[in-house]
Image 1: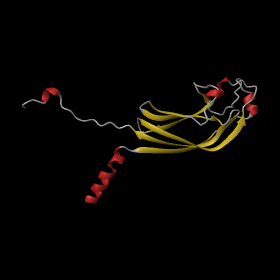
Image 2 (image 1 turned 120 degrees about the vertical axis):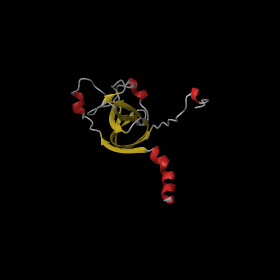
Image 3 (image 1 turned 45 degrees about the vertical axis):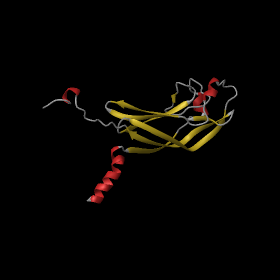
Image 4 (image 1 turned 90 degrees about the horizontal axis):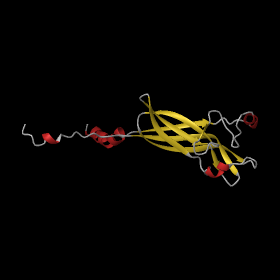
Length: 167
């Protein structure tokens, strides 16, 4: 019995302040050159099914995913590229936004509450700059993230007017 109590006391921080780990592997289905030319708006970086545009750089397609989580808290996100493809920038594309593309796959994440359900919303910049005229696009990746629950401890306090009461 004493051993069980000691184990519970040692593990109680992990039980109370638990973390959830997620690992998701996805492929991005990029459109071919023929499919891109049939689109109304030409994008020199290409596009894929389900792509959204960033407010910072609308020419770079973002991959967005939503994952249900247990509640409010913090996210620690790590992206591991599995398969990529290198391509050169097109000389006639007039890319004004080339300077805004970083040399890593940027990941933005936040936790939202919608209809009394919490979800992690993760956006991944799918293009990164390798050199002055070469880029790399993400074809397949593994996304690993940890959700740390936000815990609040409420201490019971007594009102000021009852501290000196005789009753």
